[in-house]
Image (cartoon, rainbow, N blue to C red; front, side, top):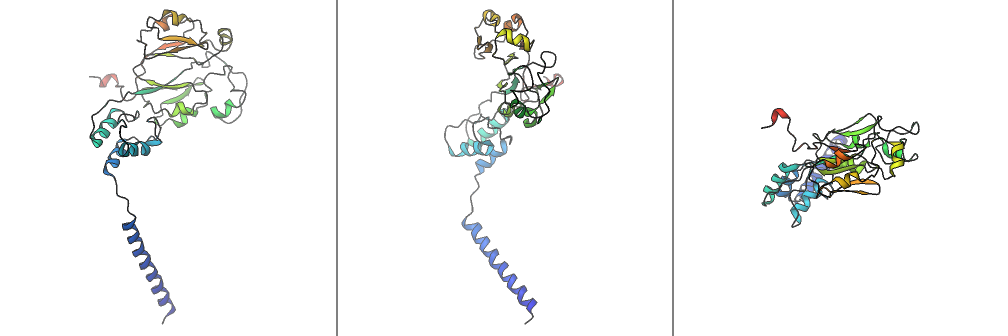
Length: 278
């Protein structure tokens, strides 16, 4: 018999046997798809940010399907739309999501502070921090090399005038920037809040003045003037208790250095351009 024909028959036979084995294996080891899981997973945005407390969207979806008592409104980036779809898939009542945004506790830009050295290393905040705490005079402020910019899925962060700025109207509150910032100056807060301390320094007032004209000097004027008792100076830095804050703005009016900001921080899920407002 022709050797080529024999080889072809052998190869074809092996292929047929393997095909049969694969078909049998696919039947024996098949994993049934959970329709509920698929619906939940489709409702989640896929940011895998961990804001829900689970290891990504897959982990949250799995927990919702397999565990009891897991809330359907834990996905901040997905907002109310995701919560509604998940609630329908699980057959539970809908709960609104508390929309959140990222804010930066630093306004020490080039107009308010300066550098202590020329940094020529890797263009990363994490790397620059290893070099004497960063190249800026303030060891608590924004380093400004954009580690937060690189992880933002919404492109809501930019570096301008030496520091990071967040456009909250693009922000979905995923928290990836806060986890990435080596200084820890980015906070995730409810976007209904309107008051923000734009400083992160724990140094005493005299030292702060030498390094940044926007820095909190711990004078406690804001604490004294707050009618709700929502702001306290701890470790030389003003801190706002948002559970007490009424957004009256008295703290900002009485701050002698102007490091307390009153603004609209509405995030993507709540923000509507004026021409779209009803």
